[in-house]
Length: 187
Image 1: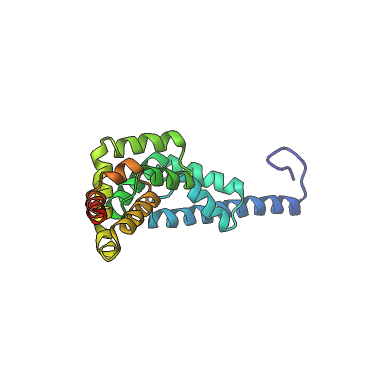
Image 2: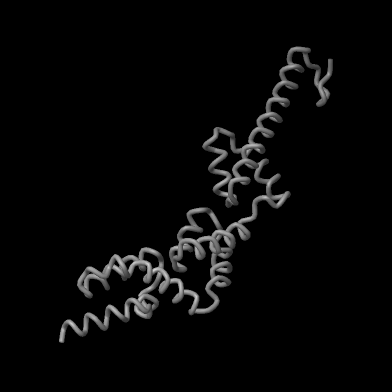
């Protein structure tokens, strides 16, 4: 008996080769199904999907095939993922540009893509200030029992952890009010 490659093959070897090809196909389909389930829960970056499939035990070759398939069907697109991620974060958990940049890098999004998406989201400085004000306002109640100087420090620390720069922090309404209180108490 001859194989597809033209070599003379024993029937057992032909069966083993066929079984191996069928096994690889089943493995690919299982990985693809896993990818679809993961993408059905939420959008993911290519790196996130690749890492999740690797944790599930699929080999790199199968993962690469799944990623190609998902990209062809436009289920995986890092630019779209980054745009959705930024919009979601800004709407539900306000944070500054620096923090968003770090999170997107951790998710494997390319630096150029991150820069373009963040430029789009923060095209005017008022957006950043509004987000910082919104977050500072939420903290106001917890800070009200503290001395003004300590409250300002905690506000600044919290906003810095959320990715806002010093200039934005100083322009928030809550910061200015605490600054006024601090100046009044010093006099």
